[in-house]
Length: 456
Image 1 (cartoon, rainbow, N blue to C red):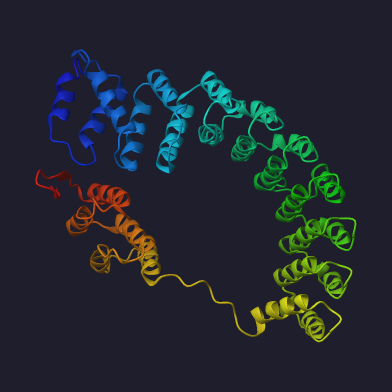
Image 2 (cartoon, rainbow, N blue to C red):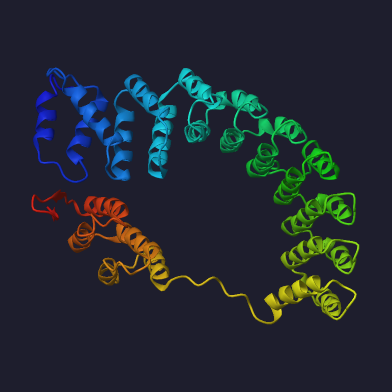
């Protein structure tokens, strides 16, 4: 270790800094090794300048890099600074992005006591809603299992905003801890809990996968979910999502039980429609004959039969000769609801008449995607020529910028991007792309006194 890192740090900071603040960020990274610094206040000054980047009106990419460096420097100090930012109200979408980075950095630095401090914010209604949602997401992204009990305790708490609790459910899903499944199942029929929270819980049950690598059905999971479908006491939105969850779990053995619910008039039509739609993803082709028999049943709401047709399509009934014949015969049956017959015709047309064309993609956007995915640098000059055109759709320009950032490896690309750094529409994305290209070619980008930028 150096006896005194002061000369090294001063040498770095005395250099003219580029638009990416490379010198300051390098000096900050030097502090991560906890060097001896004899010059009083130098470390504090570097940290203060980095904080100014985090809170300043600079490109998002630069703010993100400054947060990363500060997180590496000094955990105890960083904890205090980041915590002071976490509770600030979020004014706009850009600040929400920065806040998310700050919250994630804080959560990654901290121990259980830091997590507890963050957890306490979730139920504090005086704290900005977006702040609390970010905190929940950050805690879930880190994979710390010790937050699970506190998260679970929040879910049924009606004094906590339902949107925060939805974020908490999502965070539990991100943690991927299957031990929460029993608590989730108990929560679903609880009508004292906001239905939107329970809908999210049902979604997460499917997302975390109740059947990872299981070859046999787990009745402790499927049975409660199947019972919920019958219960009119449970909000229909919850049951709709439960049906979707059952469809996503891939357990073909439940197909018969789901099928049996479809004609039951006591069950909400929207719930039955969701059940009908779930039968397709389950992939059990043995239900095709029973589904076909339900289509002409006028006692069944047309909306349910529409979803049956969707599942028949997914299961490949339109390609099966016998099934296709039954469907064709249905088209001329005037006793069947006309909307059902129209959808049958459309679905059969998908396979037999006119394939549905994909939504057109703008040529420039499509080309930029192809250029990036194939690593084709031969067209870079043409894309650089297109980029300054403000009449070109913004999304197309952004895709071109992304492609150039991924592929550009020469000075011409760097200069072309630098010329657009101040473009209000795409400047922020250009900044990040230019950083990647400049790193690739070993160049630095400086702002000129008379305007514009210089590549060195």
